[in-house]
Image 1 (cartoon, rainbow over the protein chains, first blue to last red):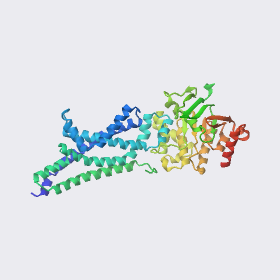
Image 2 (image 1 turned 135 degrees about the vertical axis):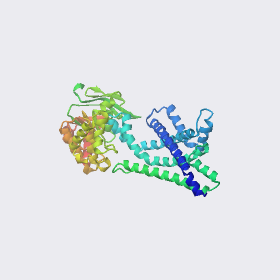
Image 3 (image 1 turned 45 degrees about the vertical axis):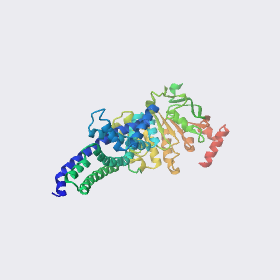
Image 4 (image 1 turned 90 degrees about the horizontal axis):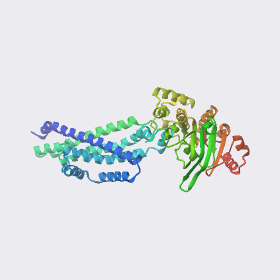
Length: 222
Length: 246
């Protein structure tokens, strides 16, 4: 049996691994989105008290300043003494927290790129701050955020492969199993795996780009 | 006394650090009156206008709208009854013209879509832009954007309209279309406070002109009195400079 037969036979395992990677990606991005948006809202519009603002700054710096592989070890091996956590759960948390730190920065600059006059005009007609943020600022900030968010999507799909190190059976680990069982063929197997990552990445980028174009405001230069 | 006034500004002061921008300004408007505030830059005209609807919070003094004092607790409801027209328009850039005029009615007054649409079309017709309803702000000239922003303010049925240098950001050839809309509103009996350098508008449409300098009202009076025989040296000097440039 040559390697191509093996690949053909084991391709469903690769797809299964890809599926795990995509679920991990979706969960970490959603978690990062919700937490990141909340952090950004508190930083921009929340109480100015340092007891609230400083911990957020610290959170952001810590999660952006530590290698993801260390984060994975901490969340899996470090936490396992404290709570019963699967390697998949640890990967979602480690990657999700880190993504929230990056996403909060993306939203932060997106909201700041909306001119101050927009908030002023919304308040001047009697909108509350919450209404102004929701109906006037958010739709404009979202348009500014899609570009940088596409970058975040691209890096996170690649980062999911690092969950390999704590034993999550995602695409990279499935590939590793095939290599171990056939004793070799590293180049061929990883080339197939690389192609799968690449396809998902391109597809996601194209979809987000199409979304950005669809939301584009006529006559409005970015 | 204050009961009959639509807008009653009493002894408003505002200070930025060591700079006292408003040193106790009072003014009142009866229904249907147009008052034009003029004065050199830095005189506090725009600050005064922003203090009226608390976009800038006054340090002291009271503002009454139809006899009711403006407070933090009622600020959104009070602002909904005062139209504000900005120097740089500030149209909502992600919404088309129709939605710009509709959104405040729907989100602030709770109007349904049909009512809001009908009202928006009326106001767009009033400023001569009904055919631009589906255009986006960035596709319009400055003069058109300013007319849309006037329609946006009018659609809320304000009891008073505040104009903060509405033509100062416009190319000279575009000021005419905005001034004509303002003249029409004044003639129709809208109650308005207008901060402007458009002396032709002041002369023609104002019931009273207020000349401000250094945070004080130096002089106020009818356009005729102010333009032809002002008692004050400062007013005459300012009007001469404006006349030379206009």
